Amino acid sequence: MTDQQQDKPEDSNSVGEEMPLMSHLLELRNRLLKMITAVFAIFFSLFYWATDLYYILAKPLLSVIPNNSSMIATDVLANFFTPFKLTMVLSIFIAIPYILSQIWGFIAPGLYKHEKSLAIPLMISSTLLFYVGLMFAYFIVFPLAFGFLASIELEGVQTMPDISSYLDTVLKMFFAFGVTFEIPIAIILLVKMGITTPDNLRQKRPYVIVGVFVVGMLLTPPDIISQTLLAIPMWFLFEVGIYFAGFIKPEDKSDSQSDSQSDKESKA
Image (tube, rainbow, N blue to C red; front, side, top):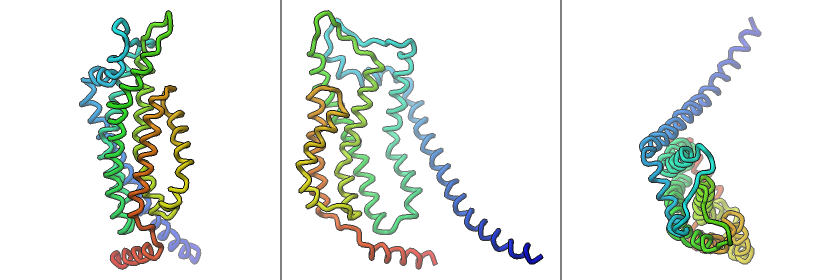
């Protein structure tokens, strides 16, 4: 009897600890299902125009290749799966604001007040900067880079780009420029967390300049134009991040402790 009585409190405590965890997991599952549903809803609404979307994506290349050339499909299923893949990726890009809102709804209850006040502007600005990076790549980088590559002609070789290879190259460049335009947000977060300061970043400017050109060489096709068009914006956004980070006050542990204490009092 005594052993059974001693086991009961332990069982009740374990149940009390598991319930919040299960509720968090259920909420995470529900939010993931909402994000997936949103992506597929956009996908099915766009799939009818998948071939038109691919033509729009390929227009920067089609406008510079010779008139007697065209794009080809070297795989039997490429004519179907390439527009399919494009539409799926585009659906994810379009759903990013909704996906971020679901992520915010999940993590917001665990943040302090000063963290919440900073998180919302950063989420909005990071989303806008990501879209700006995509548009910069499509409207500025692609015409210049593909125009330069198309001008390189080899005797006996006809320019006939593969649709799958082109899509992979374009998506890689989209991702590179989208992430690159997040540099100011990353700098602001590093300064806010006290990891670095604007003065330290200014001292590392020569290394950053070399680094952005190395990154541009690794993330873009092997032509000097696309590499430069990625490296220069990275350097510019680095300077923009330093400028705005000068207005950011590093996080103070005393503020976090006071916020945590006030949160506990409000919950009590």
